[in-house]
Length: 411
View 1 (spheres, rainbow, N blue to C red):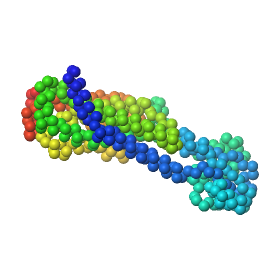
View 2: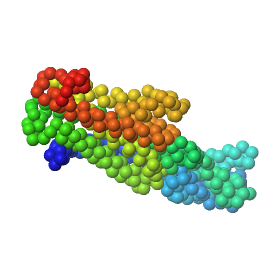
View 3: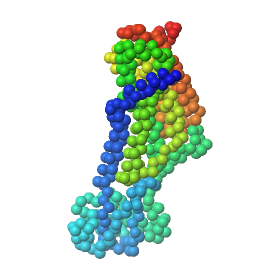
View 4: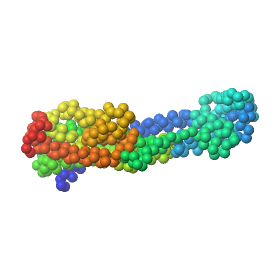
């Protein structure tokens, strides 16, 4: 048993303690941070907190109420940053203030505003989007002067649609709203991360196993450990490497979300909440899926005869993972379709299909449990298959080992 863990640690350390692995960990979060930075840059170019002027030629506002915050969502902390409103007695006064740089722009309510609702905007440089949105909210609130101030502000705030599944529905309660946007997309993020891992690591791992077979490293290792210990150790090492990669991505992505929400005040990244139940459902299927794919990588690596062939066959692992996307239209129309339920139970498509369904609807708990159990059984079978392939292919250097031989010959 100790030797099995030594093999697992060797397999893990050989891949994790490398500069290339650190680059792989940083790749996805750097992309996320770049997108957050781009969003922050775009947001900053549209925002201008300098005072905004207005001239009420029509006398429509009378004694105006103060401006109200315009929020992009219920958790938009940037909404509290109000643009000061400066009232001018004439357009000439406002123009002079604009030229002195005291205001970023000014509005003029036309004399016939009550009939035409005509408002003119004057500026030297286009005002910030936050300022123009706030002015129109300010104008609307003051047009509702007969209402209670709180009611008037709520009437102009617009709507934030929240869709909820009731508790009694299959799979439990669900909520779709701006507040849960990232939480709803969490399953898809995990599925895409899994596909990225397959694409980036499967070829490398298979080539490494073929190389060990060619230079007879495996033969030397088997002088001190059993085939089962060797295979299980390698599977544990590969799974550990993958989990470390995903954990690194998660940590850096959380940091990017926090910076985007709290430092750059991006509304979509503020007060992000993660549905623990949804994350748990993904996790109970993701872990046996990782074990299954790692065991299949080991099994395929021992059956191949050279590294060139490994490059050509590594794509076999990616195809089942992306296959559920072919059913995207059906998922949107009927997430509870029997076809989709079956694909949720198929080990190689289970994780991606579950992610797609969880993103759009509730998935019954029994289906998640069944998918996890079937995938776990498949992982055990794949590990047995890999161990058998090792035993049968030890001395077959330069020759292929077929699946029929693995399944039909005695150990």
